[in-house]
Each structure stands twice: as structure tokens, then as C-alpha cells.
Image 1: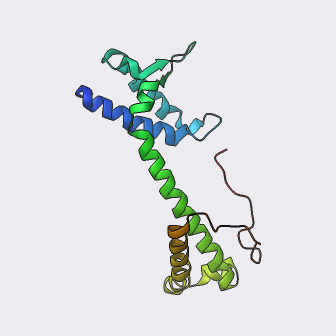
Image 2 (image 1 turned 90 degrees about the horizontal axis):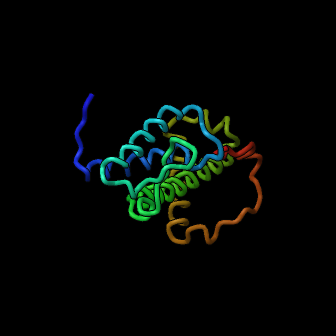
Image 3 (image 1 turned 135 degrees about the horizontal axis):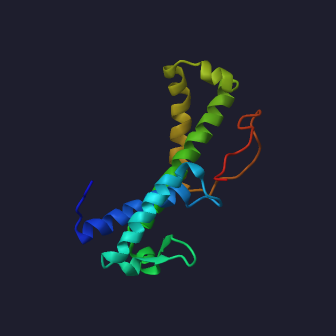
Length: 163
């Protein structure tokens, strides 16, 4: 397969690949075996920058065949603002969604009862809770957020983190 790109298109592709690279590995301490093939492919594109007049964007990591974004790439990429915006949106979305589910389960008498509700019943229960959180966080961010007590066992269990 042969694909032709202009230098600008290639530069844009590097931004896209960097977003993918950060999503797959930026939050991990250790390599994830599931993404090895994908990260190897991204490395091929990073390496090709060396021959396209974009050498200043990536530096070879000493003692390896891998490349890392150089300061010029990091400072001028669209990747990081997009990732930051996505992370911010995801944070609020997940916070509101999880708090809504927790509170709805409490009001329903437990998660099992909440899950037994019809779609319409669950929506009628969750909608006002969700709207209240959207309004609160839109006005005050996390300014009024405090951990007071755990409601009736809702939300028990471990929290999944990146590692």
C-alpha cells in the first residue's frame, strides 16, 4: 500500500497519532500489552518524520529504536489542548453520571431495585438528580463538593484507576 501525504497532512497525522498514543499509554506507569502493535505503528510514523524535514519534532530515545516528541512538537501540537478539553468533559460527564446513579440507587432502595425499573421509570428518577448536578457543577464547579457520608452502602467497592 502506498499513501501520499503533503508535509502539512503528515504533520496533522502526527497530531492525530499523538492523541492516540496519549490515550493508549499516557496514563499508565507500565506498558499495556494490548496496545503494543498500535504503539509500534505510531513509532514508525514518528521515525518517518526524520526524513520529511520534521526532524525537530521528535527525538530518538538514547539506546532504543523509539522516538519521543521533542519540545517543539509538544509546544505546537493541537493534541494537548484537544486531550485537555476531552479530559475535562469526560471528568464532568463521569462525575455527574456516577453521582446520579449513586443517588438514584439510594432513592430506589438499592442498585438491584434501580436496575429493576423500566427505562421510563429510571429516567423519571434520574433526570431531576442529573439536572441538579449539571446545574450545581455548571455554577460552582467543585467548589461546593464535599465528602459528607456514604449513603446506605451505595457506591461501595473499589474504584478503578489507570493502573
